[in-house]
Length: 313
Image (tube, rainbow, N blue to C red; front, side, top):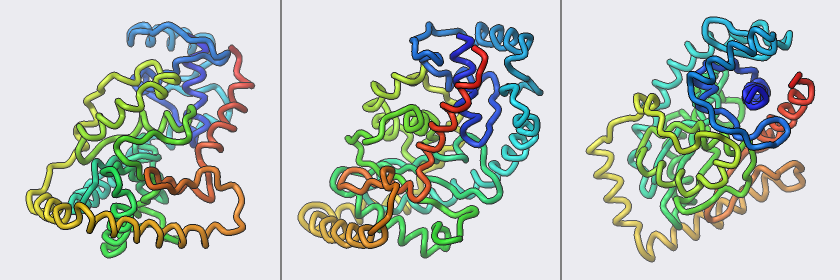
């Protein structure tokens, strides 16, 4: 269990150096230890006791309820975490406002917040990452309309306009599975906070639970704290969305989807022509994942492996 706790904290150290509270460690606790052996589950009280032991053994440090590795680089991470928590409060309000407007987009299944904001780890320069599930056969329609709406509102991330802007980098149809299934991608799913249509997202999540559960001890526990983030459905926007879905269903919607898919695939193809490191750039009729040119998941895993090699276990 000591190795599991160290492994969990090493993961979040790899991801921008985030110290965790005891509850966060409990929620995101890895299933395997550093030697890839499956570890028995631990109660929250048992975890607190183990954390105290690790602090006494100087394998961990603790400050005001936050735990982090004893690396010298971690000395100022507590203050940064507090500052990021405060910054995240403002960004959450903006994310909720934008998602409220996005209710009008037809064929959206759910909208969730991902990335640094989902962990309250946002800086002033951070954007707002959204994870969007869509109805089957309408992923390109949803992407086009969400881009147009956020662009019209002046809130879409593009070029050097990043801070506080909405980053539309992950769309997936409700019955699909991600092509990249590893510790980093499982962590994205586990941390994602559903804001619009929470029940729809939960159904999607449960379909992916088998591979997520290979990495985390509590992938199925429903922690209700994040329910405070969800937004109320807007009657007017819902009426508009349903009207658009009625107009764009059947052959009319199929033709539009096909046209938008061909148009966007050509545009994306031109942008990446001759580029390297595009393993995290996926654009199919079921999944759109635009993690390029900085494949964050791969960077996190490399740093995580480097940190765990130097841990005393």
